Length: 231
Image (tube, rainbow, N blue to C red; front, side, top):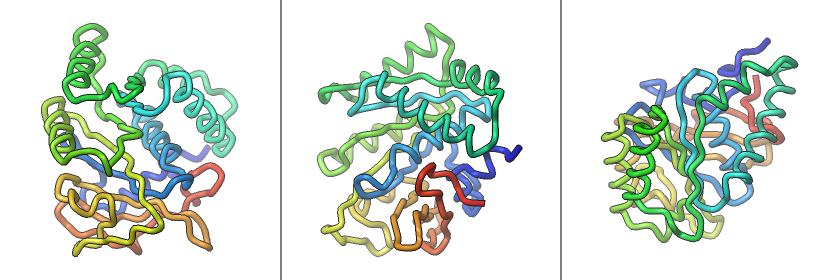
């Protein structure tokens, strides 16, 4: 059986100077609409969960049932790709190591997230090693919110991954090669990766690597159907 780490999109981080995002840091996945941001984020989640780390998925646009259905579809694609038939252990890891928090109708704010994380820790002894925040509108979100998320990551000793929507008609790129909508706040992120659909396939590229510049040609090719790394 092929280990999950060998097909995870996070293989891109094998090319990183530190090999991981790390507690206290923010990471962001940039992609255009429909390319596969949520699928890639869920693969990041599975990478954590199957490594026996605890994860909180923070959804800002979908309810818990919808998020769970995304996980289910991608999970069974993953099992099929890896040739796994007896998945009891994997299902148990998901149940033990994943929590979903949904903030619908613009109900998300930093204090509420802090309180929810505190309640998970005190009430369920669930302290996440990683958070995924999916659906935050970078164009309408003030820099202070991202600074607050970084504070939460440091306070909770966790890493936080976000997704950012880019646009074909906005070509702004800063001096470090970071595209809109992260071009003005790239200093807050330790890792920046970009998911792009090219004529030759789907590629995940490392644009920022902690304190070192990333290199757009440092990339992993993904299966366009499963978003697993092609081996």
